[in-house]
Image (cartoon, rainbow, N blue to C red):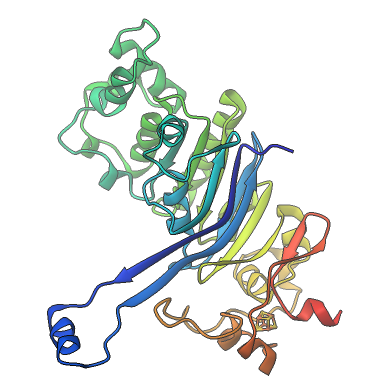
Length: 331
Ligand code: SF4
């Protein structure tokens, strides 16, 4: 089966370079090492055309870094990204460049990603003009059609970003992404900065656009309740690793990994309140010094000495379901 997007062993390491004092200390013989953060650790992900996949985890788990690698903003340290069967791991390659327009990112903070000195006409219309996508229409007509698609009035084309509300600015960010006629949207905490009522409107917009334009989504969020109603499948990430992958329905019905159970405990749902999951306690550990074995063991109520010493591998536990937890071995 050919997927629209497929990552294999996708990894990203960041090296924290030594400051001047540390470099001097090393010169005189001190054992000082550069610090390495394994932000994303061998992540496999397959997405079919038209699918919506949720990528969920706490802040600092590597999900945004993963999204940035897919969109070519960050180069992977290891692993591959294939789009429509072509290797786009190198964003500067011809395959990477041709996929760049097809895969667009929607950011959490639309205000920071919109040039405050540009009018909407140029924010939305500049890239399609450069790439010859106006299809014989004037830039103004093209921008008007994009604004209409995202529920904004065509007359807003002459405004600046500061003249919009938070929800309208996010719609503007979506219009800018749609203007280059993408097939795949990576939404990185795209509704996290919005009020709950506005969140629902923007999520509905994403789903309407999916229907109209046959879009595929990777929806990155720290909040399981945000992805529940829009995702077909969910992958849960913890400290750079995927710990559970399942259809949304199965994940909410029968979460397998203790971390997923802890995240679900925080989702306000009447049926889940009856369940006795242990809430996630403590902070996510520093990725500079991740815990040995299962990264989740310091926060896991079921941890054993094996969990502290060995890394559980993501394994299929049922058709279409995978989890990385030693508890599945004893069952
Ligand atoms: Fe908890 Fe061990 Fe499973 Fe990790 S492997 S989630 S520590 S039981």
